[in-house]
Image (cartoon, rainbow, N blue to C red):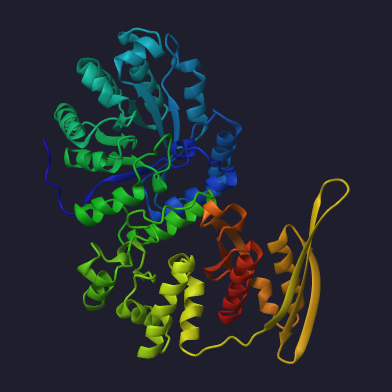
Length: 528
């Protein structure tokens, strides 16, 4: 029951990050965040942006009110989400339907029960009333000038249990003017072969009377595969979220399914020329939500086109497509060569070329030897790009001459009221001038950073632009308890670029200082 795709046939992308995506644990977005994400989704070019459930909470009420005046969408249609009328209720005085109209969006999406088990047990009403709730609600919204999309909740479970009822719900929605019928794998338990079979049967029944859609959850790890199987079976509308956000294990990841459909299957999901915005938008949304992007995410992850094994790197040096299934640039990503103790000469040389470093054979061999020794000690250079660059520069004969540290001291005191205060003193030379400064901070690393910057800011005002953004500590040998070797990673940015440095020592202060010193050296080296 599959259909052969026509080149550049359209498959609509429906993004529900602002509604379904917000149900993932640990994520919360302000109204301002939601507006910014909507702008990014429109920039990407998805067909529909589901903004939330108006009336469900003050945040979504404010979002739709502000969106009416603050969002100027070029590509996307904003959608308000809600449900059908209540059992035994009337559409004219149904609060949910009224809130949908008050949201003032041209399109609305309502969730409808299509599994008989939910109608009789959750809604505690008859199957006839379950069908009438859908018909009445679609008719009411349609007559009020709204484009109506219907999310058929638990459709695949419902069809497996009672296909006759599931199809009656579909028929009712179509007959009353629904433009889209979205088949939902709400529990995420279906597999691709089941999805393809059921979608094919529905397509034969509906024909071209409405656009079929698919909405999958990833509980079996098949959300993307199920969505693709649905498209091959006749679906032309795919719902999902940026970066796969969503309840439990998440929703269909649009950053995966869109390029799969567009690059692999010959469908068009985004406006011409917009696919290369995918990685930037994915990262932007992750940053807004403070939800780090999985580095191994297909297409958009930082490791998606990263190569570490020496054999792979050597092959890519001759032919890029040897180990890359698509050109990274098509999705806005890029090739990276990861350097570790596994690196061979080709990897080091390619990394040097990337950094525009002139390295002879002896310098390359020195880097390889240093990497093997230091990574054995606990360093991890593939996670610390800036420290790797400084290591390679030193092997080429470079020495930093911005400053020289004479000494550093950190004192932590407990006050009478039980609070802890931390004070750091640094003594540093810049050329023939000696600078000494003492500062307090929120912990030893912050105190050292504050004192060091205060000592050097008159000579290097560009340090004002360098900000530490993250500080990670890992114990490498827990068996030795407080005497364990500690690895510290520090992330920093100057507004134009971001970088990571590393320090390793049995003394956490020493490891922290190593990473901090390298971070500041790197910041000065690349000061704009």
